[in-house]
Amino acid sequence: MLKSLVRAAGAAVRLSSAPSAASRVLPLSCPTIRSPGSVASRPFTRSLWMLNSNGASSGYRPKLFSSKVLSPSVSCGCGGLHTEGDKAFGNFLSDEIKEEKKIQKNKTLPKMSGGWELEMNGTEAKLIRHLSGEKVTVTFNVNNSIPPNFEEEEQQQQQKSAEEEPEIVSTPNFVVEVTKQNGKQTLVFDCHFPEDEISHGEGEEESDIFAIREVSFQPEGDSEWKETSYTLNTDSLDWALYDHLMDFLADRGVDNTFTDELMELSTAIEHQEYIKFLEDLQGFVKCN
Image (cartoon, rainbow, N blue to C red):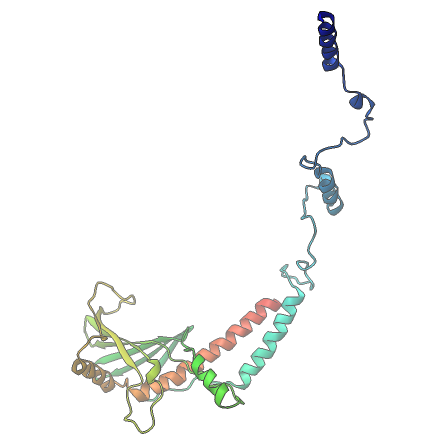
């Protein structure tokens, strides 16, 4: 029994110290068999990168597969990207510009009655009038001045087939500034066009198509609105006081006739700026 235990222990020692027969027979050129979880994809990925590169020593490491979409389709001196999509976009803009110019009502800006002088600064317009020692300035910007009319479009589609597109009218918010001669303060009215007052109802008394939102005094010559100045909000204002404020503006030429003309002027300016934007966008896309 003791001899059998000794022989078994000796055999175990020899097996643990002997090298693996498989490792001795395996040639050096044969890749080692690995389990699925081990890193076996590196040689394959590396070979794909080598096929797609300009050489390992070039220092250039492109993506695994180069995209044909990103390749410029038109040679240009600007060095920018030009694709077939850009070409189609440019052609679309060219047709769009032609159509917008066809429906453009005013090639030149309409003039305001009442002796108002117009000053333009991009999309911002100023109307200035001098009378009896006072200066009245009306400022508006045509950006975001086209109100949405989803309900009207749905009604038109239900009632009749739209042979003509609905007329687009610009209704910008505007600020009226009244300055007395040698005065240190300016009375400022923040006005807007309520959506339910833009069109006059038939058979009803003509109502004001614009409304005063806020009134405040601001220092003369300051272009920035000072939040520290008291601002009168008209939402909860006594109607008698509100009527006097509207009459005050009407006496200085800011009434329904003026605001009708202002909408016509703003619509013309907005359409001009829209066409100019399309032309600039076309030039940018085509790199003219």
